[in-house]
Image (tube, protein in one colour):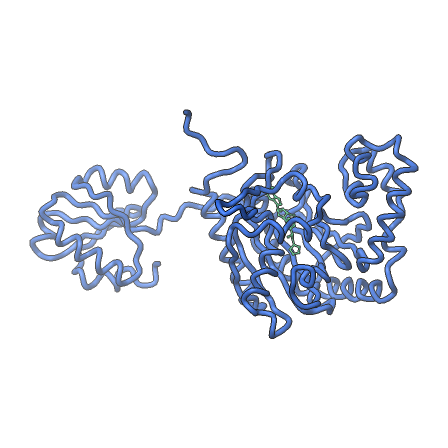
Length: 413
Ligand code: HAM
């Protein structure tokens, strides 16, 4: 059998891992600033926590979940998203006594989609959630964090925040009936895929990318016309807040999101620089979901962003030459070099040794990798308990005592 990785999965190394680390650092910094605590959940959960909340008719549940029977016949699913596992974890660990509860996490998700640029079967999500507040300020805080993270990681990329309000669950049920009626009246002009969704999931027709569907859905009834005055007020307050923070947004009354649990505020950050997989980040309110999963009747709001989609748009991260290479001429000096390594380690100075005893080769390797400093150990250094530090950029070199290493590199790393 030819060795290969599973379709839609990828190994993370080189530039990609550097970008991943940078994303994680920026996410954690923003989470700390806004007092969100990290919570990581297991990769798999009992299947039932996903199927009903995400929607029996949603693409994720219908076609994309990796589910399997465990040896004891229990159905398990590799998590396709973070929100329901976070809620499950908050309930089972009794974290909901002090509200609002603010949580975040970063980790792998699994969806059996058709792989393409920006769409994979195993991908990583950044996820932020607030449980237990129905204040629009929770929505605002989440969007501010999302915007800050995207701006910090992608300073040169244009993205647009799309926002909508779906009203409460009863508005949505009423709206779905209206939509089904409207689309069934225009059935002949819809794509085959959308025809199948007229009664099962009419909301999804609104964000179809098919030109015929777009034409028809442009004149479809709008959810905004049937939502309550209170929701409209909340939406206006949210817009004022976004203006206050200078966050540009577009009101998009066709934005419905792909999972069933949403209501009220929904939002997405989109970019035209990613091709068809243009959503970098999406989220919204899911009042009622915590209760459906067996928790108290408290509201929730959150978002998730795709790490791979973000990293495709990031600039290359320059290779650091801030590593000191060791060049040793003979294995007699190994004790001396271990002593030096110990000093470097204790002083947090990063180093690299290829375990070889060949000055010439080690120096030329360091040269071709643009390394600035090399520590050279030869006969003279060994006998006098010294080391030689050569700056490969300037060609300057000096002999120093081992205990001096700290002072020589002070502040450089
Ligand atoms: P979602 O829109 O399904 O929402 O996914 C959020 C983000 O994950 C997408 O915008 C995209 O960047 C990334 N993503 C999704 N599928 C893939 C894939 N196959 N390959 C690469 N990236 C992907 C949710 O998952 C909700 N749980 C978000 C949420 C949190 N709502 C409230 N709280």
